[in-house]
Length: 509
Ligand code: BG6
Image (cartoon, rainbow, N blue to C red; front, top):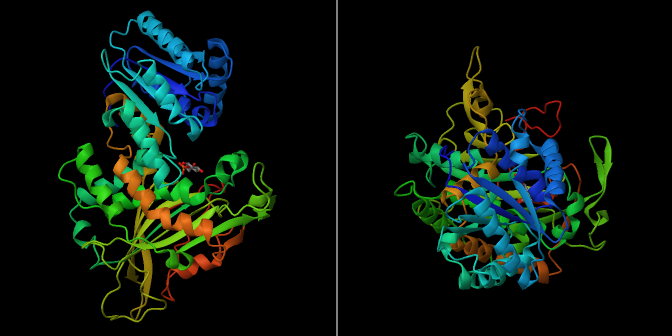
């Protein structure tokens, strides 16, 4: 993490009383305060339709920090809360932006901040992503005449290819690309960034990182919880838009990309976008067999009855929205020609885990008899969360007469690095935006390439009633039919978790 303090600035959070701000943004900013990484002169203005004063906002954010922050040291809590302000404003009312601009100007003066560097964070429903930037621009708040202005836009950036293009075109009327920070919080995860370091600063992996040695690549992002109170949002989203179009495809970009010419933002983003542009389109005819969708059914999870998706608050009782998606696809380029990529994600799966597994090809000749299939024997597992780390699996001789083999693991856990804590994704990304570093933010060409790839799936799932939404009991690994995506008989998805600890939501590497 960049450990230099950014220039003085004010951060404005639209939707400051919402879930994301309470759970992630404010606790992450507090973590930066604790690490002494916030600018010398700094303020956070929460804004939204809710009528609140500074005092009430501070109280509510104090509760949020107490509930969601991982910081044990709360000695700087009061100092941090003193940097919070609240201004009621209705995003739909043009005059409110003028008034907001005046308020902002006054606060800059009060704090003695010379340049009016400002970050506007859109933590609102996506329907406001075009309205707020326009309102800010009309009030002159996008102009970089006396300091920079940056806009952080939460996902989803559009709900399909056409709407993403339209949203972007609208933004570009008033904002320039260097001002736009499209957030994909997976890119801020320490272990996701470590994919780049593992690949490009070790000599041993890169020579093997291609179709000659890799059999297939598998990525799983499983969540133990259902949609909870987010049924309303999720109905219009589903797993494909919520997780695949952004987080999982960004991960594919990093795993599959060519070595960048340098470590700067453009060089890295240039290479990862090429991967997304090389994804072989899944034709409408293929969707039924290459893209599996599922929906969780009411069931007992760890002894507790949980609701089926259709019984959740805000969900249509006849909903066809998928809470599970599994895809098989190919990256059509020289490095990956013919190597299948399998990705899956779902809610109410047995545990919370995100990992990428590189399955290497078996030896061309099996010199030693094996008890099971050899195909699974060499795997590199990159564990994104939890128990962040890496593991290599390979065959060893079991002691004694003969040549009996066993698969063993060599593992590294981030938790063994006692000197450092793993910064949360939002900490890293907020700090990067303050420092003007967009490397870990999604560039528009990547966002559009990802929408383009999933467009035929979206369309077939919407329009072809013959493609089933398979039910799966909550607490299982999704519909059985997803297993058949991996066509070779001895192969299957890796079922992570060598062991579950007492915390059922903590799957060890
Ligand atoms: C969000 C999705 O982007 O990512 C959520 O909207 C999902 O539905 C979340 O739960 C998963 O993030 P993480 O960091 O917990 O893996």
